[in-house]
Image (cartoon, rainbow, N blue to C red):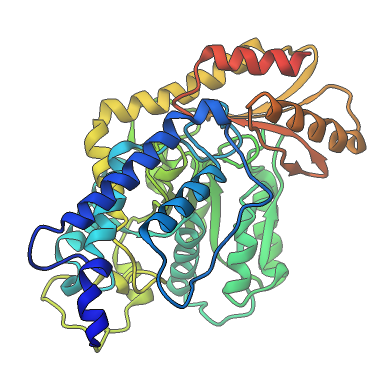
Length: 461
């Protein structure tokens, strides 16, 4: 280590001796800047961006503290602000305070979920929390799960495990079946797995956006005729555009009858399965072999927070275990890097753990119920003589004026999005089956009925 670095190591790294006073000062200052940004959200709107924002790269010598904090401030000022009540575009709610603190602790620990010896307490925490989730949704004692950085990775882990379990790891005739309204990431997953578009069979949906069971049965029969080998059927628990839930019981019965792995993409709606909130179509999720749940999408766990839960942990071990020859292993402890695609992982589960511990089950119910109540209030008060409404049991609503042709949806939705943004409402504009729609996601805990009334007033104008 050079003499210059020895002199500066207390600036660069936390000290193993002393009080870390400089670090505490920096943390306090950063916290103040962040909290000021939250506090001024309504003043500046959900999305501000200066075209002159500069992304500065490292100089030859490190920048001063004042320069760095100035750049932090500029970064915040040019970011999407999820705490603004008008932030209703996507599945990105305000962050829970204790989840933010969990992010700080996880970063400070810098433990690695690759192996037990690199993260002893966090390994046990992730194992226990996944087990808790699995039991809450009705899985048995052999169940568990693994966290991943986002729903796409959780779904990919499930698909790879399903294909391995079916003994079709390198078979070019292996196929997966998904709803035509399933998340677009399944196209990406298919490509990653070395398959092409013909290996992804899309099942038609009914007028409620749910997988059509008759079409599913016909597609399964056609796969058999064409010598296509089905390794998984994916049911969606909350589609992206309208929050629809596929008929899980019917799909489960078919999977059991034909010995096909059932995976549920519950990235949006799976968290409701942990509660007693009555959601139509949520029954029988415990009949699945695997389910993805993304707490980041509604209850405010800071990104990223995604879980893959499986009915039998052996399936993940058998699929992903390599032995990790360079890591010391403890008897009866499974290294978490042996249970999924990711090796090195941060201690993200701390954010979920602290967030849930701070809420309790009552607080969790409160957040989820409030999202449904906002959805219901919006639908109750929108002019149904003017708008076509597309919504399922969850907290997502898409809509369009009645009688608008496909071509005109582009202009109308873009015009409305721009008008709403000027009034500090940020909603999304998905393209779905050839048409553009407007979509609101009612997962923002800071949005109240007066905000929704103001939003509807602009839409009705």
